Structures are given as C-alpha cells and as structure tokens.
Image (cartoon, rainbow, N blue to C red; front, top):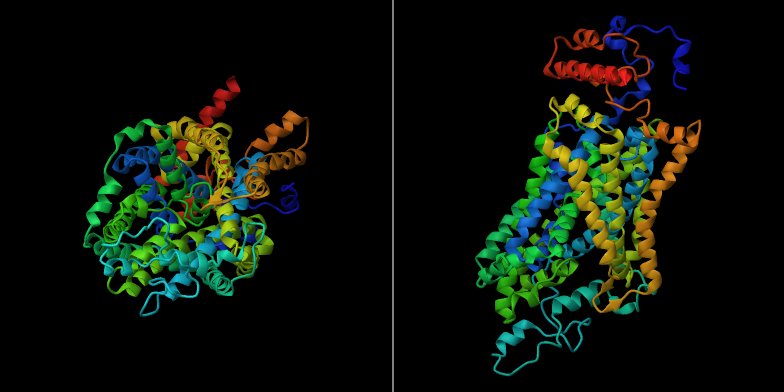
Length: 634
C-alpha cells in the first residue's frame, strides 16, 4: 500500500538529493520529532534509577536473610548471569535498534503485537499502586518534620491498650516480667490505625471512606511525576541526575550511622551468616531468580523505552553490565544499612533479630521508623530515610509512565507526538483517579491485591514469549542487527542464554509460581474468593492479549490461514533502524523512497569517509548475500 504514495512522483536517486532536501516528503515520518537523550549520562542514570527501586531496600535484604544469608548470593549472581543480564541486553538492543516503544517495536513480528499490549496493561496496573507507596512515603516525610516523632509514644487517640512503649520498658528496669507477646509497638499502631485507619474497613469489599490526607499525598506524588515527565526524556533525563545519585549518598550516611550503633554486628551477622544447606532447596533458586527478575525490571518495557531514545551506535553492551552489577551491589549495601539498625533494635528490645525483621511496606513504615525513635536526632534520620525512599521510588515511576506514553505515541505519531505533554497529563489524571480506591480505609487490601497479582505470572509469560519470538521467529537476524549496531556479534554466552537458559529458567519460575500458588493475605486477614478471582483475572488478562493480538494480525493478512500466519510473523515493511543513515543491507530497500542501488556511495557523500560501522555494514551485507545464495540453491 505504501508504494502508491510515491508512484506519481518522479523519484530522485539518493545520489542527486542534496542533504538539505533529504527530509522533503518524508519529513512527517522522520523520528527527529521523537527526541533523544540530551546528555551523555541521561540514559545510564535513567536505567540505574529505574532498576534501583524500593525493592532493593525492602525485598532483597529480607529475601537474603530468609534464604541462607550469605549463601543466597551464590544463586543470586548465577541467576543474574543466566536470566538478568541476557534479557536486559536483549531488551535494550530491541529498543535501540528500532527507536520504537514497546508496542510499535512489534513490527519485528506483527503476529505477536499482543505481547506489547500485555506489557502496557501490566505497567499501568503497577504504576497505579507504585505511586500510592510513594504517597505513603510523602506522608511519613511530612510527619518527620517535627521535634518529636508522632509514632514515638503511646497515649495518642489512635493508640489502644495493647500499645507498649519500649522507652517505658527500659525505664521500668524490667525486673517485672512483662509479657511482650500480646503488645503492639506505637509505630505499628501509627501505621495501621492512624495512617491507614484500617479499623474503619472490615475487608476488601468494604473500603470505607477516603482518607483525605493520603489522597492529597497521592495527588502530590502524581503532580511531581507529571512535572518530571512533562517533556518526555528531555525533562526526566535531567531529574534522574538527582534522583538516581542522591539515594546513594543517603544510603552511605544511614550505613555509617547503622554500623556505629551498639549491637549492629548482631544484625549483620544474621543477614550474612551463610547457611549453605539452603542451596539444596529449589525455593532458594526460584527466590533468587524472582528477585533478579523484579529488581532489574525486565519485561516492563521500561528498558526498551529508554534505549529507544539512544543514538544508534550507543554502547549498550557496556551499559548493561554497569546497570545490572550496580543494581546487585546496591541491594547488598542496602542490606547492611537495614540489618545493622535491626541488630541495634533487637539489642535495645531484648528480642532476637528474626522477631524484628520484616519485608515489604512493614519494614519501611513500621520497623525502621520504630528504630529511628531509639536514635538521638530521630526526626533527622527519619526524614533522611524517607527522602531516600522517595528518590528511589520516583525514578522507577518515571520509567513506568514514560513507557506507557511512549508506547501509545509511537503507535499514533501524527496525532499524539505534537501533543505529548497534554497526553501525559491525561494518563496521569486517569491513573490518579483509578488509584483513589487505594486512599480509602481499606485501601491497603487493594494495594496488596495489586502487588500480588498485577505483575506475577502475566509478566513471566510476556518475557518468555518475547525471548522465544526474538530467538526462534526472528532468529539469526537479531545477532546480525546487533552486529550492525555495535560493530560486533553477541558471543556464544548470550546466544546460549537467549536460546535455552533464560526461557527455561523463566518457564521453571512460571511453573513454580502456579504450583506453589498461595492466596493473598494481609496480616491475619484472608482475602475472599471473589477478590482472588479478580487478582487472577488481572494476571490472565495480560496473557490473553497475546492470542487476541494474533487473531487481529491474522485477519489483516490475505491468503490461506497458514500463509496469513507466516506473513504476519515476518518483520513488517518499515522494520529497521529509524534513521536512513543507519540503514544498510536488507534495511535499505524497506525505506519508502530509497531507490538508490548503492547506499554506501550515499553514505560517503553525506557523511564523508567510511567509518568502522560502515565496514561492519559491508560485512553484514556480504553475509546476507551469501545466505540468500545458499537459500536459492536449496
């Protein structure tokens, strides 16, 4: 169909086109208006900010301590090598090669466009509740701006008789045997009874009233996110200079403070003592793989989106290792900062470390704040801790939003690219309104449901499918594309991981997740059956997008069913590098209007001299000619 537009026009061979007129009729299709990163570190810091998130602080340390302490690092790094690094590199390569978002990138094989739709669905659900966690952090951040932390003592209107203040315990010279088991710390009651006001809701089906202070915090967090992604990667690429580096500064401060506390060694010993017998259980390997999977954020489309704003020859091979290893080291560091403080706390309270340690929001909003009240200058440390969580959370949220906006604008570039700022506003407002249920008294139940199901097995299905399509359907061409882009082919390690190891590992994860399925719970509250069904539906819906996309793709082709399937699984006409100067070999003919016989001549005229990348292009072309000859002989 695209031939028609150029038929009536006399075609000027590229050799005769002056550089100024090269964007004549194709101006509207030019990716110039899509924009690129403006600085050299923008991309790298955005990736680091995206991968290093709240999970590094509240999931990793706890997972390590429950799964064999120091021994957990063995499966962790093995899974990083098998599953993390290769898929990370694959996602970056796809984005950078095509300069397209997670939906439009499926020009690579239109039959599987549903994978992109599934990704966007998952990311949207995650973005809704992730911003609610940022809202809680803001709430605590403001609450820390006092001379006395509000969760320090009992005796406030929200406290019950069960509340027991550890300051009173120590003053009472614990000669009296006090039964601690039935008591609650003031920080726990502050969180559940004041912040969440969860006593106002009987369960997930009865959300109760909206908590206005939480609602305003949520509004504020969406406003911050919107202002930062207002101009796309041009604005968010600058904000990450702060949000990606500042957490490290605070983490080091908290670490130094933590290690100098009395009893800190107890906690660190607990966190790192290796129990190698754990390595024999499959659970530990699965947990390690899950931790890698979620903390690197593969499959959410964020990496693909960020890479799509790179220049064509950016060295993403190097960046892959910087980001993935940086993320792992951050997780381990965070563990020291968390467990040194927990060790101090266990000594103060006179209970073993494992009774103090918690994972998830409980660590961030109950245990750590309680530990802060035991320190001198407690509001200062509390403010620092929550400020760190805020900066950790924000840049991950930028990535989710950028992914959604980019995906949709790349699908409808003519209408939406010029209006990107107002389109971003529409999406932020829509997601804010959907998140309002999380600000109710029973909002925590909804948050747990979203957290458990939105990015569970659906995400794995998406990543497994992507892996298989790129290696099996698109095949050898993928390595050739990387060769064209980076000047070298990926080694046998990457090929082995892409073809066999990564998909196999994730299949195992998927099976494990389904077999070991446990219904969600929050504290002692069991979710009703309908809520679980709703959760499972969320997961299944993202998987269902894949067959749905297939049906649509097949209906758009012509011929018998098998011919249609074959046609739809081949790369679309426009697939390839976005800029004309990066197209060589098979990709030259697929650009509308390029009729020149020898693209290299054009290269030399336009850009002067043959660079190492042009040499690569010549090699790649030669390989392809040989392959075609072989095929024709067969």
